[in-house]
Amino acid sequence: IDADFGASVEIARIGVEAQKLRRFEKEYLIYAGMPISREKYFAEWKSAHERIKAMVDGILENRDGKWSAEDAVRAREWLASLKAYHDGFSDVVRSVESGRLVTTLQGNEAVRDAKDAFRVLLDGTAQGGDQKFQQALKSGQAIATRFRIVNIVLGVAALAGVVLVSLSLVMVPASISRPIEVLTRSAHD
View 1 (cartoon, rainbow, N blue to C red):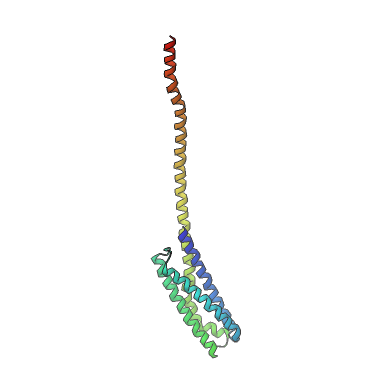
View 2: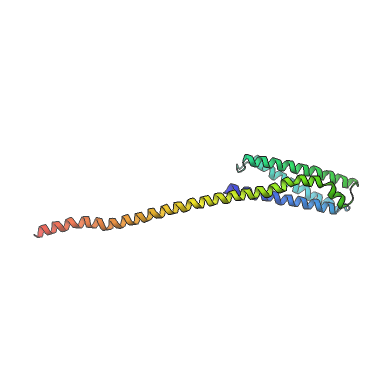
């Protein structure tokens, strides 16, 4: 449960950073004609890109052992998607800086293929995070079911123990007192 839930959270963090990356791209293109503003957003874009890359690389390194082979395949797809987006957006940045692209509309058109390639990561993190969360939930439900069974068995065992002790409290004194009564009557007679 812990591994799947932790993986779900990490994938969600990658998704959040990916959305930030897209937002910084949009802000960059809005301010394409304003060098100081666009530089600020490009710096934010680069920072978000590096965070995503580091998190996806962490999945591939799998230091804590919570990632499956299937997760590694998905992470490689995300890295390829991130690289395609990086390369496409970097081309747009060079075009803006050289003066070939001057409007937001031109920039949006130029980055379209890169954004389409980035959908693999955006959609993948949404699906992957939900999948890991559902696995954690399923494991939790299985454990809860097993605990209910264990609790029922323990309850039945406790009830059997109470019945056994009660019978022992009735039978043991009777088994001791009956021979004494017989002996007392015999001695009295």
